[in-house]
Image (cartoon, rainbow, N blue to C red):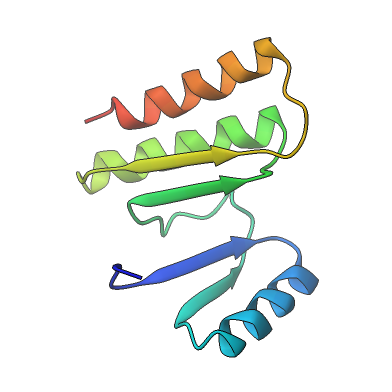
Length: 105
């Protein structure tokens, strides 16, 4: 896939078990970490947020990523996708958080 290491993070152990099964089936070496994203601090450099958490948690996650960036300067890539309908004000909030993350460089 072009990356030396890939990990997925989720609070729901049931979803992680499904992900682990899919990774084995696809023969992909991807770690599946059971953790609270708001408390996790082992972040890498590429972030894919698929239907992530609500505003308060997402803001805390971005703050943790910024703290991680301050400790270990690197290029950061962030992708956000949500199947939920996002109101324009929410879109601005999300874009603002991601902008804070990538402009920290």
